Amino acid sequence: MIQVVILGTGNVASHLIKSFESASNVEVVQVFNRNCSGFDELSFKGKTTTEISNLVNADCYIIAVPDDAVQTLSAHIPFENRLVVHTSGSVSLNELDSKNRRGVFYPLQTFSKEREVDFSEIPVCIEAEHAADLKILNTLALSVTKSVFEVNSDKRKQLHLAAVFICNFVNHLYQIGYELTEDNGIPFSILKPLIRETASKIEHASPEAMQTGPAKRNDIKTIEKHLHLLDQPLQKEIYKLLSQSIQETYGREKL
Amino acid sequence: MIQVVILGTGNVASHLIKSFESASNVEVVQVFNRNCSGFDELSFKGKTTTEISNLVNADCYIIAVPDDAVQTLSAHIPFENRLVVHTSGSVSLNELDSKNRRGVFYPLQTFSKEREVDFSEIPVCIEAEHAADLKILNTLALSVTKSVFEVNSDKRKQLHLAAVFICNFVNHLYQIGYELTEDNGIPFSILKPLIRETASKIEHASPEAMQTGPAKRNDIKTIEKHLHLLDQPLQKEIYKLLSQSIQETYGREKL
Picture 1 (cartoon, rainbow over the protein chains, first blue to last red):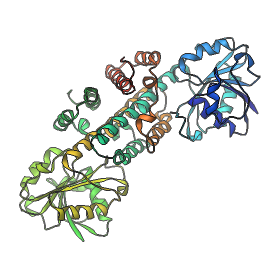
Picture 2: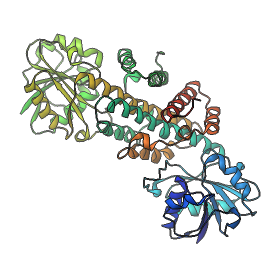
Picture 3: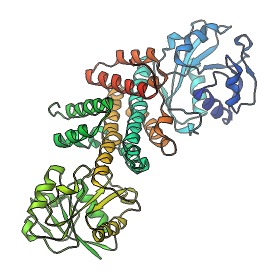
Picture 4: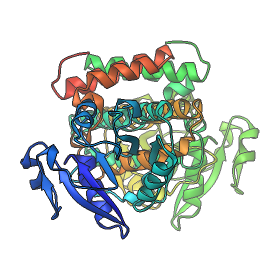
C-alpha cells in the first residue's frame, strides 16, 4: 500500500484524490490546503489540515497547486529526505526544494471540476531524482492509468507547450465557432459532428495529411470572403495568421 | 426513387456517390467529370461522361466541384428548368445559373478520400428557390443522414466560416502539436487522449465554460516561458495572438 498526502484542492488535486481512492494499492492519508474552504468541494472523507506543520507520514507528497505556488510551498514543507513531487507541466523538477527527494507526477489532461474524467486513459509523465522513487511513482501512476511515460523536465515543458496548442487554443477556436454560429441564429450543435470528426481523423493519420480547407487549397477568393464576413478585429487577425501558417506549411505563397 | 446526376469526382462527390448508392430511394444515374481520370478512383459502376452535352435526365443535378468552378459549370449545363444544386459552404445559391431551378445541398463535414465517414451523422444544409425542390432535397438528405437543416445562403456562409475555425484551423493546431512533440523525440500519440477529451468536453458544456490553460489563468510567467521555448516565428505569433484573444475573452489585460 502506497500512502500519499495531497497538497491542494484544485482541479488536478480533486481528480487525483478521487482516482487514488478507487485504487486498491494507494491510500490518501491526508489532504492539505492553506484554507479550509477548499475541502468543501472534495468528496474526500479522510484527514485534512490547513497547517503545513501538521503533515503526517507518507510515502509520497503530491503538490497539486498553481504553478507559481509550487516552489514556495515545497520550501515550507517541514521535513527532509522524503519523496515530494509536483503535478505541473511547465515547472522544472529543480524548482522543488532540494531538502527532499524530488519528482514529478504530471497527468497530461485538461481537468474541470464539474466534469468526470476516465483517468485510465490519461497519460501520466513521471520523473524522479532517484531510481527507487521513479519506481514508486511508476506504481502510483499504474494504479490509476494504463499509460505511463518517463519524461524529463525539458521534454515535459515541450509537451506542456504542445498541449496548450492542441487543447487550450483548440478550445478557444471552438469558442469562436460558438460565437460565429450562435450570434447568427444558428445552433452551435450543428458543428459538433465536424468537431468530433476533426479530432478522430488524426487518430490514424498525421494532421498534415488530414488538412483541408481554403488555406490548404490556396483558395484566395474564399479566404477574402471570410475576412470580409468577420467583424471582430482579433478574429480577423487569427483567421489571417492561421491561414498564412497553413499556406506556408504546404509551400504556398503568403497572403 | 429520386434519380440524381453527380457532377464532379472529388472528395465530396465520391462520398456522396457512395452514400446515395447505399440508400434505397436514390439512384445515381450518371457521374460527369471534365476528364476521365477522375472516374478511376470512384467505386461507381454506372454511367459516366466527360461531355456536358451528354447529361441524362434526372430529378436533381448535384454539382460537387471546387468552389470557383461552380458558377461556370452551372452556366454550361445544356438544359433549363431542372433542379441544379451545389454542395459548397461558401458559394451563394445565386451564383448558380438562373436558367435552372437552383438549390444547395451542403454536407457540413471534412472529407478525405482515404477516410470512410459515417454519413448518417453529418448535418446536411439545404436551400432551394422553390418549396417543391426543397422537399426533394429534404428527401435526398434524409436518405443519407438523420440531420437536415434548412439554411439560407447568408447563414450558410457564416456556418462555413465557423467550420474553418473549428475544423481546418483546429487541425493546423494539431499539426503544430505534432511538430512540437515529434521534433523533440516525444511520440505525438501521447497528446491524443487530450485531443479527444478537449473535443468531448464541449458536447455538453459551452467552450467558454471549458476553457483552461495559462492564458485563461492570466499566468504571465508560463506564457513567457512558452514564448521563449518557441523558435518558429509564426508559431510564436500564433501563441501570442490566441493567448491575447483568450485573455480578452475573459476580461484580462493584454499581453
